[in-house]
Length: 302
Image 1 (cartoon, rainbow, N blue to C red):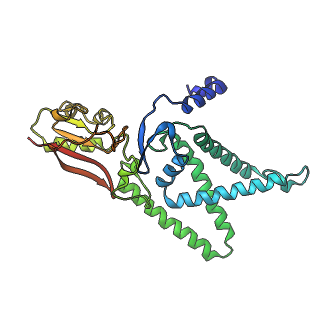
Image 2 (cartoon, rainbow, N blue to C red):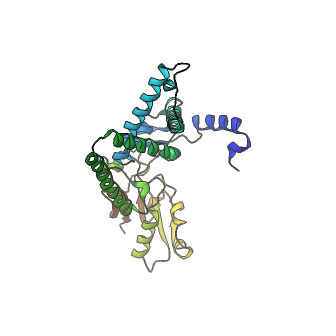
Image 3 (cartoon, one colour):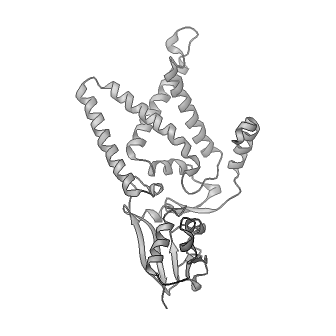
């Protein structure tokens, strides 16, 4: 049973307090800087949404948000008792627009002004994506009806269709690692030096399979983890026979055959060498997906 069903008001307040002072307080990489989850910059949520959302969606969202906000602001300051044109909404569609605007504004304001502890992107708030898409579609509709000539309308649909085909192609390229997507403004080989790319380690299965292929006759392969990543989550994606061949030994690097690093750290790498690759290991592989570097593999020199 969803928690809010049992006691909506009390449990909502408890959830509000919990996320405002989340017990897990760590550090992470954000925009090239090491930051604490308790001291996030005000633009944290805005930046993450922008860099991991297709540019067209973000553009239309900004246009739509301003349009809806302007419409209801003007109605609010001109509200009267009788003329219907000054009502806050004239029909159910406008009431729905206001509802969406109110929800996303309140949620984002809560995240920013109450110093909510977030980490590794905006995965805690993916549910607001439906509001973003709704407002983006609203902007698309408003732009379309503003065109008087048909060829402008057709051109708009054509350009958007081309862009959607481009996004579909990106989805196929990234599959099954769509969580790694960065839009074209931030898609480069150094993005892992600015943001945490694969916190959940979904590419770990590929890493394990590649290691097993390299060592078909070895009964036990010891893997060190040079990242703040519970690699044991990834190994659960393998079948039992493959899992039995792999032993994850964490930061016990000198007893490892291979080291795995996906560049994620809860400590500042500039001042802490917890995940520094020892000199007796050599890089033998790296996984690059659509110009985004995901992880590196190092082998011990015997």
